[in-house]
Structure formats: C-alpha cells, structure tokens
Length: 265
Image (cartoon, rainbow, N blue to C red; front, top):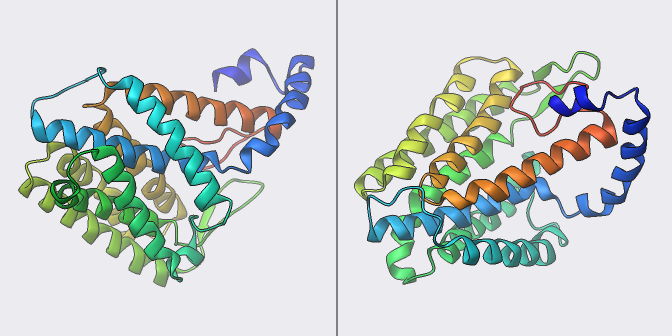
C-alpha cells in the first residue's frame, strides 16, 4: 500500500493521523463496508434501465448528479431503517434466520429504486441481479477463522462450505442464463465471470478460496455495472480508499483489500 511507504507506522505523522482517525469511530458504526452492496444494486438498476432503452449504452456520465444524490438518500435510509435496527448484516446467522428474506426484499427493492421506471417492467430484469446478490451473500455464511499471527484463513465447517458454495454456483448459473434471456449483457457476463470463484471454493477447502469467493464477485459486479454508469466508479473509489486509510491509521492493517490475508500495513 503506497500510503504505508509515504507514512510508515513508526513515524510521527502516522501517530498523529492515527489519533485523528479515532474521530471516525462513530461513523464506522454505520457499517460503511455494507454500502458497497447497497450502491452496486442501485447502480445496477440504473444501468439495466438505461440498457433496456439503449442496449449499446457504454460509459455514461449523464445521470451522475441524480445518481450521487440518490446514493446519499438510500444510504441514509438504509442506516436509519436497516443498519441501526440490525435488520441487515452478513454472516452465518443471517442465512439461518428470517433475515434472509430481508436480504431478498432489500436487493430487489434497491434494484427497482435504481430502475426508476415501471416496476412491472423492471421486476423481471431484477431477477438475475437478485440471484447474483444472494449468491455472494450466502458465501458470507461460511464460517472461517483467521490466524492472528499468520493471517491465514481456515474453514471451520466444510459441510457449510460445500452447501453454500454449490448454492452460490447454481445461483450464478441461473443469473447468467436469465440475464442472457433478457438480453442483458452486463449481468449475464458478470455472473459468468464470477461463477468460478464459489465453484473453486466448492472443490477446494482452503480458506483463501472462500475469501476470494467473497471479494472478487463484488469487484466484478461493480466493474460491469460501471461499464454503463461510468460515474459510479468515483463514489466506489472514494469509499474504498477512505476505508483503507481509516483501517491503516486506526489499526495498522490494509483493509478492505483484494488480498486474501489481512496484513499489517
């Protein structure tokens, strides 16, 4: 991470910025890491709506203002209605409870808000996106343990790994097929590209494969959505690096990261 070379952890500047980062502890209670899912679903709705009317739309910035304002509004409402009331989260307990239904309704709702047009027309187009979201969501139900010294991840339950990874793989195949049938190249291609990650995790037991199955499908979905709504890369970039710098200065770790092991900065 470049910032760790510019401001090494033993420097006086790091200590000053570390103290300053404590001011954001309250902000982190709003679970900004969850926002990636909220935002991708909403932007996916915008992208699908635009693509429905112009299949060849690419790298569009014309709706950036309404997109950014909408992101602020849906994030605020999600914090007040879902996060503060602990109605939404990611982990094993979410899958084993009625909160799975909340995720289903939430994902469909976020997409349709982004769609912004006739709900009856948008509902069929939401199906492959909801399936892809649920595929990623259930991967977070696989319990893994990280060694504090080595950063190595170990799967605690292989039975759940098999079940959830197979389920995620099937959902992504369905998403690909339905997206293709709806003539939506974004979700059909994104789901096809994401499919190998849970499938490899189904075949191989090491925890690093589960971590990849959690991380990379989110990145893939975000990039393919941004192919139509190019402005979306900017808020994603800002949130990603804010979280990286916060965790580096607050805890000395590089997070979020595309590496499968957390390491000291």
